[in-house]
Image 1 (tube, helix red, strand yellow):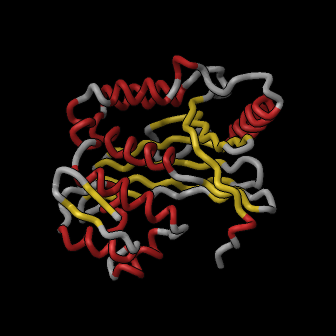
Image 2 (spheres, rainbow, N blue to C red):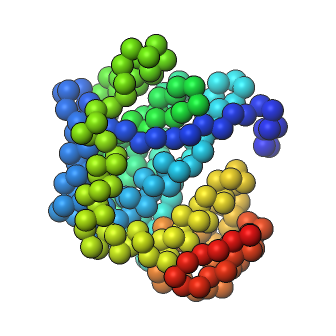
Amino acid sequence: MEEGAGNTAYIMAKIIFVKDEQGEFQAYDFVHNLIVKEPLMATLLFQGLLQLEKAETRKMSTGKQILPDIHLTIGKSQAYSLQSTRIETSIDQPIQEMKIHFKDKNCRLIYFTAFSGTETYYCFAKGYFKDKNPFADKMGSYREEAKRIFLSRVKAELSIGVEEYDFETLKELAYKNEGIVHYLDSFSAGIGQFVFSKRIAKKWSQLDLALKSDLSPTIIERIEAGDPDLTLRMYQKACQALEVKANFNFDEITAK
């Protein structure tokens, strides 16, 4: 059941990188190296991060934060996929994991949330290539870090993040890679961002959109991922379900 409009407040999101328990910006360095050494994995990661950043979250009157889950797939065999999973959830600081699967490689990023007024901060703390989370025993320290950032922001004693370790710097690096920018600026990736934003605005899950459009959940994941191997009819059915009149000119998307 959806909450009434009077019971929610819309919160803008921001991705930041924070120090881990060793006092290092390990997640930032991990993503930086991913862009340089594994650009194909980085393309799907950036599609997910951009969606996370653009999605409005909702804060209920109870104080609970409603956060978007990101599930993206490229290819029928799901050889390329990204999904976010909640490892541990509390009212104050939910801890989540973003997993990227690329053929025979897997990498994961640990992040938590910190709230301040009208902003939600997705705080990335760790990244690694192992299937098993080697930092499970560090969850307590992540919660403490989230609490520290949250309280410092509320008290306006400290700024969040460090300028040279910000998401904008990583975006600039990513857009210097021809393969990554070719994907992010592609027609199919643009449709993915478009469909995602319209779905989130309606407070629908991917399953909701799948049922309303008569498409499978996997097809919705592929649309939002920017999978280029889809038909125009699939895009049209998704937009019709979202009650959006869209014109696809294969160089831009216009909607009413």
